[in-house]
Image 1 (cartoon, rainbow, N blue to C red):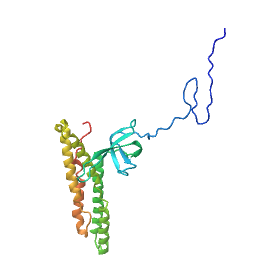
Image 2: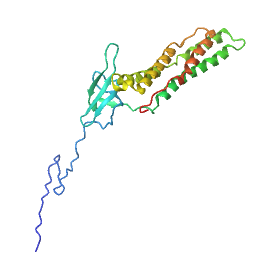
Image 3: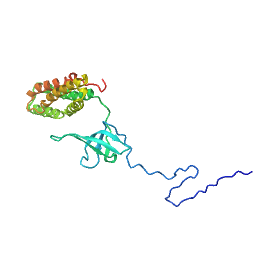
Image 4: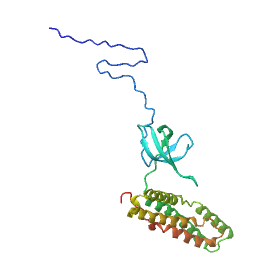
Length: 237
């Protein structure tokens, strides 16, 4: 006896309409693209704002949800204005790819190392100035080169590190964590960075005579040697 077979008619629709396989009922038409960029954002990422009042600024992500298409970023305070969190969409931000990760200790070491390099350049110039029969013209050149070397002084990393540690500490203030050893270590770290920051702020950046080189070299060498004064607490330690 012949089996009864169900016959399914396949209708070919007009162009632009959805084509359905009657056996599996799966759309063959390309699904619309998700309007939300597939950025993997999480707390602590840095994003650049693409539009609005904060356009062009780079801000830290507080929270992010690709499902809700929302990114909460922190706008730091400025003067008397307190910092605030604002909500943007994924389309309004672009993740900033961070350079190779460096620990806080490494960042401080490199910054102080650069100060030490300037001290070495100044020492070489001082040796030139102490040679016999150095003309006034040569002394003027040495002064100019010394000022050029000191113009490369960049202490912004020290301030950045200090702000990071202070922010970490302040987030623990008013909570049970304020009485922990971690909080005390953060306070000590912030104080040490503040002391080094004050010392770098006082560094000479211009001289008018080769006779000043010796004292300036001492200033730079003293600051460069303070690397071991700061102990950065670990995230989990």
